[in-house]
Length: 137
Image (cartoon, rainbow, N blue to C red):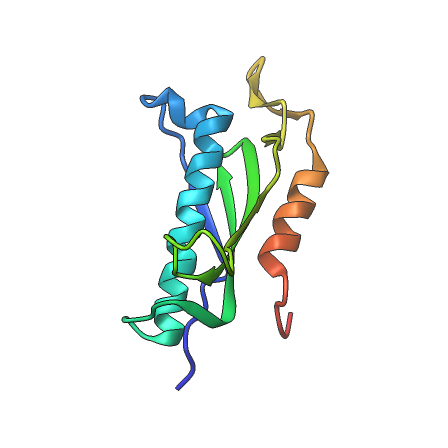
């Protein structure tokens, strides 16, 4: 029986109330936390609910955080669940320092739908991360 695979987690957060989650530090912290949790969930799917210690094969999960306009990309690789061990195998977290905008304006301007300042590089990163290792496209 094939197992499901968590590959890319997309976190859409447009919470206007908690402004701290929109600051770079909040986005980075949220990406690290959710990346770890998604990788842990995948490890439990692959190795069983009682998985402990160093993993025989690492589990990597992509994470994309967005509010619909701004995007932050990260990857978490879970190598071990020995989180209290200061030496030995470590887990890896990579993220882009910058939070990039997909566009400058997406709104009605003088009663016309307007999109300006479109940044195609963001969509390229999004699709590359989402489609990495995709089969039969």
